[in-house]
Length: 129
Image (cartoon, rainbow, N blue to C red):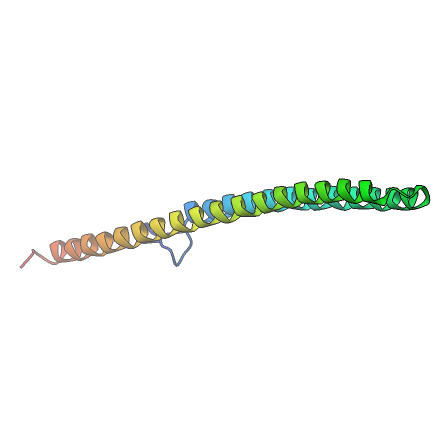
């Protein structure tokens, strides 16, 4: 027999639901990190473009206009990255709270199982007395 009844949902053995939740959390975190990395790549691309334009404007003498454009682009990307990081932290906190609730439920079920097993042992030994 591969597993016993007491192994199902045992936090020490690692239940399937717990592993699935961890995988889901991992996928969500990975997805959010990909979004943040994409934002950083986009920002880097914009900065590179702005640096090229700086050189052009230096030769033309209109650096202040470029500086304003760069500041708007940097502020926009920084706001997006900040928003993404805050959302990631909020979802991570929510998942942590959910995992703690699941842990409490598993502990309660384990306690109930122990009571049931003790009762069954008493019954199989000839009674409750």
